[in-house]
Amino acid sequence: MSAAHTTLRPLMSRKSGALQGRISVPGDKSISHRALILGALAQGKTEIAGLLEAEDILATAGALKQLGAQIEKTGECWVVTGSGLGGLSEPEAALDFGNSGTGARLMMGIVTGHPLRAVFTGDASLQKRPMGRVLDPLKKMGLAVEEKDRNTLPLTLLGASNIVPIRYRLPVPSAQVKSAILLAGLLAPGRTTVIEAEKTRDHTERMVTYFGGSIVTREGAEGLEISLEGQTSLEGGPVSVPGDPSSAAFLVAAAILCEGSAIVIENVLINPTRTGFYATLLEMGADIAFTNERDVSGETVADIKVRSSRLKAVRVPAARAPWMIDEYPILSVLAAFAEGETVMEGLSELRVKESDRLAAIVSGLRACRVEAKADGDNLHVRGARQVSGGATVTAQMDHRIAMSFLILGLAADRPVIIDDATMIATSFPEFRRLVEKLGGSFSEPDPLSPHREKFA
Image (tube, rainbow, N blue to C red; front, top):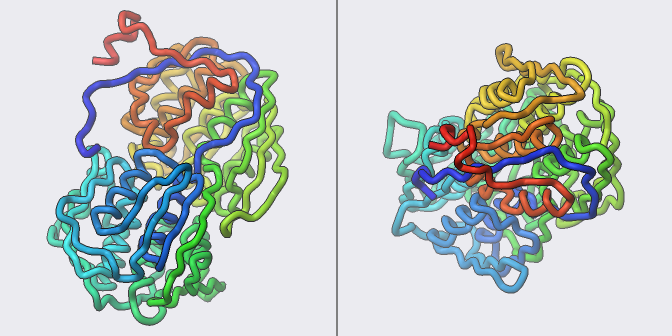
């Protein structure tokens, strides 16, 4: 959806009893994007099981179809019939990525290596998010942008058939920028190299290798060097998408906070670049265990056992941020119930997400009578075993802010209302159903309640 929606759908959570059960979460969002994209660039058919059927992923599928890729759902699988490297064609209409920054940025890399003109757009939230960091290296490879003085959507991009490989050092850690460069490099002759001072999530490297591409990773003088050999044919095949650890994080948090809970979440991705949240929870004293580890389509997955736990405050170093950037909103909720002051360092990236997440977290926690402040790029949360709640929190069109404060309401003394739950569908459309299946309690608030003025 490219236009901001005007009908708000508030949702309320209230104190819950013990959560119990064994469930699975939908497929990982990052891997789902990449499976569709690489399937479209590969030869032959790619059958994807477990694809996340959320708005962000469907936006990427829609954009690929506009570029000429054949994508259809057959039974429980999504089938992508690829046309090989360079086989995409010019779209007749603008590519609308809705709220998906990942989809837009990765697809910029793909368009770079095709001689076509494409307009990229998205909803009101996405149109505020910066694209300069990904456009700058892609321009060095041969991408042209008609809007010379702007780096936010909508943008008109002009790809080329004669792009050049580059050697590029990331100025800040970003898996999206790295991936866009590598995806463009698939279509460039020779070797494209990305250098990162801090390792970021490596799903693109793993999946390109799984599809038969050539990537070598080594430690260099400037940092980790990821080198891709361009114009190497990719071959389609079966892909199984594991459960999204960022989605699982909300259910893990709910079980930790609701007294007497014991749940198992099956088939969750535990890629080492995505487990910073879980490492932090173990430091805080959470009762979590990983069982039945196994490899699936080039990734490591496991089942996660969680029991309710008393948490203690910790200091989360900035170096961990790239491995858990999406989990800070729900970690801040857990910190609200932990004994002592939790300090989360190096969170500048949170200011350029779907909302200014750092500001949204502080505002929401304070509304729930939790002591919280942002000190530069650091977040301080002083926790207590009991949290008042009893607030209406503005989600700011941000799915992770909405879900995080709904989880807070499951353990707070008084209910918590989110002013709009619509955006949850962008990444985790089954969030409410799964929490309620475990025993959590959500409801639509009475529009005539004292909170009604918030929904105007």
